[in-house]
Length: 273
Image 1 (tube, rainbow, N blue to C red):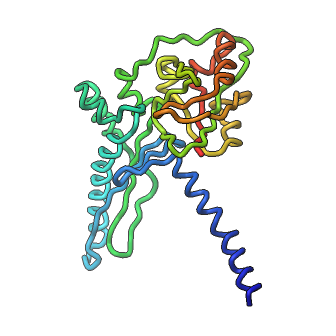
Image 2: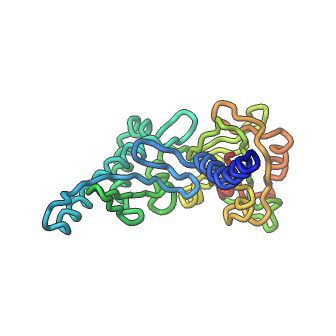
């Protein structure tokens, strides 16, 4: 009997634990705000809205259509709350930028009008409908473009380097205090900046974001953003929200700065564990 129970327990662990671990890893690059999710790995903000129709209505098609429209409007209202909670840096959220600048407020409101339905509607047995809408963080119509006037990008040119030493930078962050954000700062152990928004080319930042996020180091090494010869380092700690790398690793970047292009081109990924 004991052997049978032990076998059941082992099988349970085999089938259950991988899913639990995957969910924990996934949460490192996904942030829930209200009825929405910021998926930092995909570079999307997704929100959900709800509508309802009368199951007893003889014209069920009309009822579903009205519920669908209500759910989409609800999703767009919820999207506002989620967007306002997007973290820009250690001190600032999108809603702070909107409060500080009427221009940014207008830009973000215009940006939100570009939201699109994400995936198919879900019709539930209780007469409710769920709809997701999304907007991109980066790209031609991304959130970062609406925030650009406040981001502090420098007028950074791309060096003319024929054979760069490294094609990108991958930083492994094994610290639960690490929080995804649009403009993280990487520093050395003395607090000197190694990577920040003011070091990158604005056009590249708007296109692909200042950093990329992931949870799998092997996948990161193959990512077009940093391939095919990235420098891979492990963060020493999180200081406030700054990512601290060792002085030795920082020296590898700074001593070869004239032979690198990845900093200006935003070819940096953070792997959150």
